[in-house]
Amino acid sequence: MFWDVVDVQAEAGLCLRLKFADGLCGRVRLRSEDLVEALAPLRDPEYFARVFVDHGAVAWPGDIDLAPDAMYREVRASLAAVQSPAERRS
Image (cartoon, rainbow, N blue to C red; front, side, top):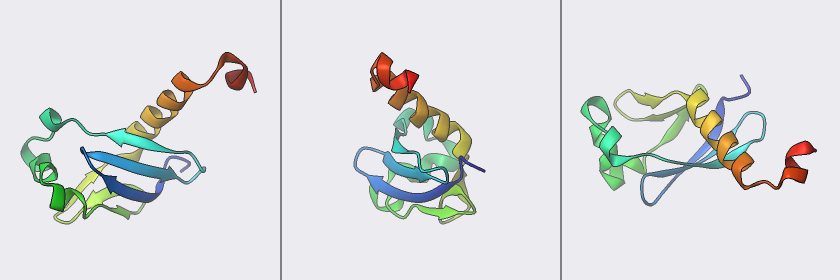
């Protein structure tokens, strides 16, 4: 799928730099208050840095993964918000 993640890099502040199968690139920042239960280990910066791509999804050891489609929509929306009206028409 076009929203499959092909590269991911962990950054400070619970931020992920992503590249998707269709070439779209951008950042997604996770919210600490959303990292509860099974996602709680992601609050540890050392653990968070162990991120990798698993079959198009963002993943960490221990069977933690995040669906790429929601992150794709977030990146696309954030890029659209910073484009000028002329850029959006092209």
